[in-house]
Amino acid sequence: MTVNSLATYRPKLHFAPKENWMNDPNGMVYFQGEYHLFFQYHPDGTTWGPMHWGHAVSKDMITWEELDIALYPDEHGTIFSGSAVVDWNNTSGFFPEEPGLVAIFTHHLDGIEEKPPVQTQSLAFSHDKGRTWTKYEGNPVLGHDTKVDFRDPKVFWYKETKKWIMSLATGQTITFYSSPNLIDWKFESEFGEGIGSHDGVWECPDLFTLKIEDSEEEKWVLIVSIGDNPEFDRGSFTQYFTGSFDGSTFTADHESIKLLDFGKDNYAGVSFSDIPDEDGRRIYLGWMSNWRYANQVPTEGWRSQMTLPRELAVRKVGEGYKVIQRLVGELNSYFSEKVDIDECIVERTKTVKVEESYVDLTLNLERVDAEQFGITVHHTKEQYTTITFDSVKNVLVLDRKKSGQIDFSDMFLLDQEVKLENTDNVQLRLVVDSSSLELLVNDGEYSLTSLVYPDKACEAISIHTFNGTIKAAGYVSIPCN
Figure (cartoon, one colour):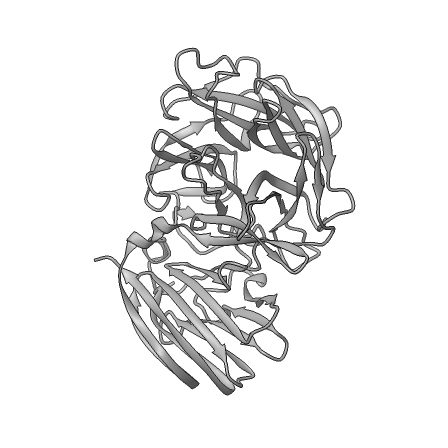
């Protein structure tokens, strides 16, 4: 290796641990002016190992301060994924004086002598803004006699019935439970049989409402991550369902598979709890990796990063609904000026030099008669990533085969593709960081999140066409000094 990967690949805009292994985001909650991000963490190595909860806080979800480990393994097992909430009304009895944080997480106890592992749900609480935690003496609070996969609790307060609702991953279904106090849980319903993708184990559910664009109506959305299945080339990915929820049962609008992200590297994402009502946003964060190669990516001393935070909405498209993703406005303050790409006709290539450690591209492309067109991110003269729109097939293809270091996984070489309604007019938002690209298309209707490992983030961006011309206009935002 000719470059120092510790320095080269570490992101400027995305959260990554200072050292060692990280995977799923956990316990994301807003409380007293801070966004909390907990995460699956192995403090003794750079590959997956005995899970703890790491912890970081932020004022804006972009710059994070990593704190001490929040939760350690104990006699009930290691600390798998889960969520955190503010117990505003002391339903748990943990907060007689003022509200505090409750973490709801999975204890994972390895099996002994060919017995399967045991997964149960447990609680911990904090009186000091998440800096220290006390595990509930009655742990675990929820278990199951037969389900081996019984994990990743995501909890929210359902005001209509004045109960907490838990979404739990249970094999290839999601099971819903309710509780008045976070301690005593009652089975409500089970969702998922014969609907959506079942290519792998279901993980990391999240259930919430989203406003429908240009409407006063809302939709319930259920996010479900799908674990890696070696029989397929996709690796791990995330699907979602739109529908309704009555406090007990979730009913989907559709049986089809809807992907939250068409890239390879957005998994296990969930949303922040307790964003203030006056803010009104539903903000999502995902783990930027893929289980097929997460343990092999070429970083040294640390491994994995999170996506940028994204505001979610629902858009009615035809007779169905799509989840829309937009990068949060807090990101804008990390860019100081814009390099304009004045409206122009592009035949073959137009190049804009932007030698920066990270960039944010906004671009509108209108097809005149080109059969193919798109953009190339030139990381260096020899390393590049290409995004191509095929107007004959109406597909978008992201190709990272020449993006830098790629020899750690055969699947990393595969193109990432999404079918579009049409390619006559496309709007792009692309953020390039030290080792990632996050592409949002048509005002967030499609998302492609991809890791890359070049020697440098970006030297130039070019717009290219094949067999014809396009109109192009936009700008590149560059970092603050």
